Length: 122
Image (cartoon, rainbow, N blue to C red; front, side, top):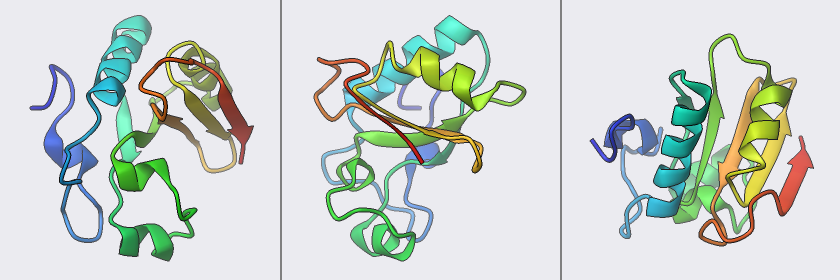
């Protein structure tokens, strides 16, 4: 386990099973733990780390936070995506709301220094 509620395999690249050489960002993990405590429900990770090949295959941007181990795409069973995104904006530096796809992208590109600074809808 990386933290109380999150395991290494939840963040491993879906195509090759690897993690970044520097590991998953501790700021990201702590942010996810804060979110978990705040909403009181399990958080599902649909995409964590992506190796460069996998990132290209899914159409990720060249400087994706996923490749750096500082991002995760998440959802919470039974929770509205916009509601989840609004809470995430208080914790994470980057928050992308993907209503049609049913997930929220969260990242700690600034190490958690500027919550809600980078937001977008996909």
